[in-house]
Amino acid sequence: MDEKEEPETVEASLRDTENKPIPIRLMLYPDALLIQKQEWISIQLDEEDEVFLNMVREVEVTREPGAGFGLCVKGGSEHRLPVLISRLVKGEAAERCGQLLVGDAILRVIPMNYLQCFVICLIRVYTVLLYLKRTGSTLDAPDTCVAWTLRGELSLVLCYLPYSCIHSLFVVEKDWLYARCSRYVCGIDTEREDSFDIVGVDGSKSGPIHFKDKQTMNAWFLRVTVKIQLLLAQMVRTYEIIPSIQLMIWAHERTTLGQHWQNWREKFIALKAAEIFLFDTSPMHASDWTKCEMKYKVYECMFKILKDKELPDRRQHCVVIQTGSRETICLTLESRADLLALERAWYKTSNLAVQRLVSKTFGCVWQGHLSGLILDLEQGFSLYDHQTKSILWSYRFSQLKSSSDDGDSKLSLKFQTDPAKSLETQVIQCTDLQTLIYCIHSFLSAKLATVDPTFLGNH
Image 1 (tube, rainbow, N blue to C red):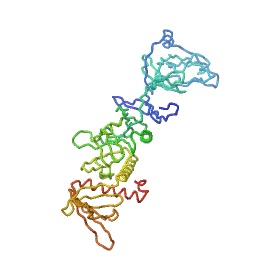
Image 2: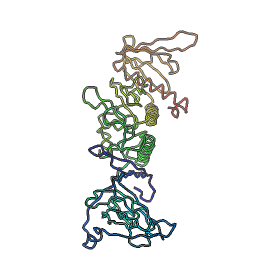
Image 3: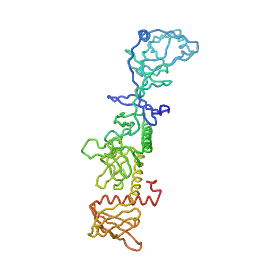
Image 4: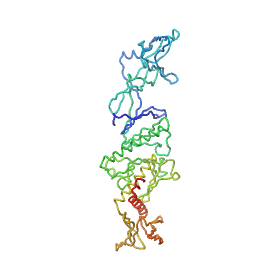
């Protein structure tokens, strides 16, 4: 964390077990988020300090005709606080008397001489020694700070004191790398109105951070997510141990209905080389990539963004990934920007993988003969006899006009070699039909990308 760089800050709150607000301050650095919470601690005072702080005293303040008394106060019964002297105006009556201190609690005021003079009965509030802790380092206090003050029957009060008071803030630091944040209640489709939750790489949660309004919450949610994605992108560019990564991002996967009350679970998504990886936890070591149980070749899958009427519940920004093994994976992203980033990375990963692959062959049956269907990025479709290895027919990708299948193993491809002639239909049977269909789609997409260089940019 670069402490020399000035952080962005905002006042917010957490909630305690009774749902009461706990004031906090967020400090946003390029690589970390600091959550500061005010707290107080007791200290041992010297006997002389105890006598001074517990001394109830009367102070007479006399002002000049037409002048003010020169003091400012905060608190009061309407705020459930004692009346505290917050400021003494330099050169005015209150300061000239030399017996008042900022932080004194006023217990009673006795007017005298037609308000040209009054006697204040007051007590010095015990200001608890507080400290600022940040990763073991003591930092300078700002010009004005918030401090906790305490004394017996006065209970706990919060007042603003000048720099002469040392203060303390409890700090929680959230590293950005592999962190994630969400506006949804964990596991379900309920979106919070004015708060979001931040989860660190170790799984520790900040708890819902509440803001004064939804506009402020949305602005800070965007700041946080952008910082996280920038740090992930920077890591991808820096470390050679995980090359060819197009995107790493957090999402939520739709679980099987009826298994658990939580319908969504967190997944860390990575598009690397020719595959999509779905991790339960973020990959911290190179071995995690080889151990990942959910990974699929992107060119053997279909990617689809769901329309509003197709959404499984109230969660927005959903996509469906259908695999060649007929698995359906439903994912939801936190924002439309994340959704579009995943879509762009998917097509780029798929197209680049096909360009490296160049061709792929599927075993099939054509007119009762065991054959092989070749998908070639340059040549298009070719079918050869398994025994003789001779080419039985071939077509360019641009000659494919339509296709249909029976959902089991039969695929019909209709080609047009001459505009003046009717369509030629080739029917094949393939046991791996779904993978074949998705591969055809991926090869057509990659071919279009080679013909139209703007295709990758637009998708």
